[in-house]
Length: 449
Ligand SMILES: [Cu+2]
Image (cartoon, rainbow, N blue to C red):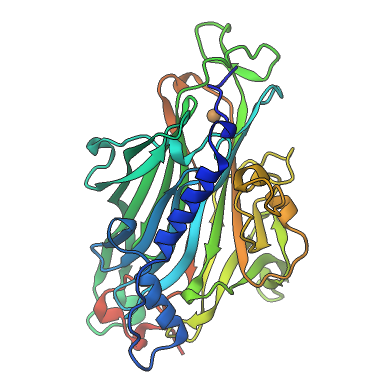
């Protein structure tokens, strides 16, 4: 047995459902703010979203550059950290801009190269109930928040001080000379950026996973899953060529394996679930006759039906608001920026980079969904099956980032954190750089004719 036996069957399904219901109820409370006259539906929705939770369920942080992020959080016994009603309000915006309705892990799938074992670390291991307490040193400059979890082998409950809410520097936000935009008394402007950072640590057998979200003052969201802890001590017998020697000589070979991390993103741009999804591709387009230089052309494809997408050179996707535009009159959108990934091609639900599905309440997990959501519910079992040709009215975006872990000597011990991540980057959320100095935040410097 490579892992401590943990089974969903040890805990009653009703308990899980009851907890999920309670968490949702908390998220849904909060009186909507009275709407001043003259505001648009999107603005009213954003104002309501800003008050979607209060007290210990709310995270509100104004970063030094003046950007405020607001969101609600909860710990789901299965998914772990769940963020809802995430809004972004840079200095020059009078109201919060809603980005995400809900965001959470949808699965961590771990198959071993020798075919001996495979785990679904989120759905089979009570990922959320496996949260570890954090010490003040684990959350430098931040604040620890507590939540209730159930013991893994009983229904007893305990409080875990396990959420860190902090800020971290992120280096240069910008550096530029305003003579380039013909300011009358030009000068060099530069600024350092900051992130609001929230994370938990969840223990699954010998691994400790860091579930982290960075919210940058420029509107970028980074989802990161870090794997640390220890190599599984029962897996040092990879004698059939599917491992790597990690001890003296060649006796102890750690089994190679894959971590596929999948996130589920329910976008709610400008307060509406009804967003559009677009794919952009840039391709060579002949040669300029005069210069002899190559030409490129970018095409847009509106994705109106459920799909499984794969990255390729010069391809990207964005989720476009149907409810709000920036002050330039451009629809707000959020671009998915994937980082390095190695896909596990053996499963249809880890074979693609991105899945976009029409929202259904019982489609919560990228795999093992039927068992995790509850037998009897009319659910399909994995995200590949969720893609069935439906029209996208309320799209749900599933991002898959894979890492094939071939252990190295440095993995002992504890194992250095290995990150798997992607970003959600604003595209036309604001009419200009949200951090631009006040004197440059002017139509004079916005576009050239
Ligand atoms: Cu690993």
